[in-house]
Length: 62
Image (cartoon, rainbow, N blue to C red; front, side, top):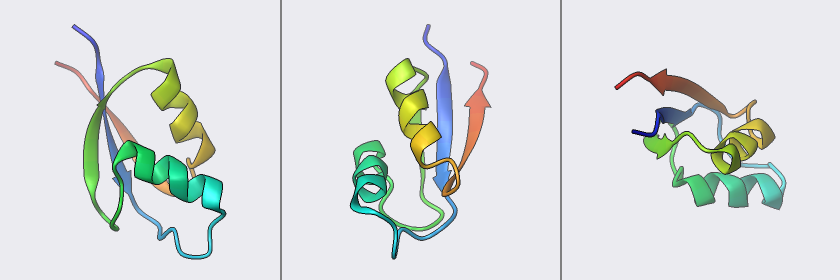
């Protein structure tokens, strides 16, 4: 079974570069304090790394 990650948007995307906005929308984060649960893959880890200053992550042990 694949591991999961909770990702929460903690800072606004207003005034951020369009690349950051596209990454956040790609992960399903559209509003502040919204949390999404995604599979722990290298692609998702790369996306998190690009916007690490805007999100909070938590690993889920299932």
